[in-house]
Amino acid sequence: MIDITKGRYWDLPWSLVDGCTPCSPGCDHCWSANIRHRFEGGLTKDGFVPHTLTNVYGTFNGYIKTHPERLSIPLKRRRPTVYAVWNDLFHEAVPWTFQNEAYGVMLEPSNHTYLILTKRPGIMFEHLLKINIPDMPPNIWHGLTVCNQQEADEKIPVFLQVPGKKFLSIEPMLGPVNLSDIVVKEGPGSEWHFSALKCDVYPEDDQVFHGDNLSAVILGGETSLGARPMHPDWVRSVRDQCTLAGVPFFFKEWGEWQRSMDYYNKYQKNFKGVELYLSADGQTFTEENYMLPKQGTTYAMAKIGRKESGRLLDGRTHDDLPWATKER
Image (cartoon, rainbow, N blue to C red; front, side, top):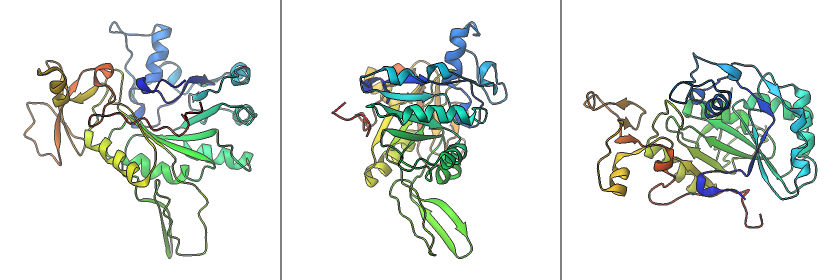
């Protein structure tokens, strides 16, 4: 069963692809790359290897290895299981033939659920358009990962055209994200606005947009070495958008940072470690330059580690996962 208490939204990983290539600011401190190097021994004396867009290393420099021998794993398991398909099955270097084989397994009748996350919605859409699955089974969920508004604006309109059930993963969240008004198409005499959550389409011609809105949103802060803090108001905004639209919202974790005041309320003492001031527009300040101009609410953030920061948002957890039903 899914261990929601630990912020997990899947049961087991289905690791079909090794390696990746950074393609987003959210890749700067890739947890998967750090885990890989932890097992391979390529670590610093502190137990980590920095991962940045300008200092790519190891198997996360574009070298991709697929694992055909793992394709049959779900077919050997009877118990209903939610599989997370790692790493990006739609990386540019993954052969289309291998993707076809993976879908061949997922299309087999079973009680399993498959979560297929990508940062490359264009490749995902192109491939699914080519293989043309008439009715995407409800146990196959396609997911898109974004980290800020720019990625949401660029990738969501493409992703919404992917057939079947879809969810959004905002992780790590590096800035505010507004899902309420996404421009799907602009052209002479027409401008369509497609709300990723409410499915509002306003065509000004006879064309029809074929797509479905998001059926779930997952959100989490950054972990690993070099993790950046996440502003509480960014999280609240997405939570409120989902509540208004009736879309399930799952808050995975705060990451390495949490509001210093929350730490004080928990332990009744001030935090003694690393602190930053984070403004609503994403600027960070130290105590020395705190008086610089800021926009919106600014919070003192404490780097206390992911275990201490936990998953509480305004005093409660948010555990809504449409694929984690009571029947499971």
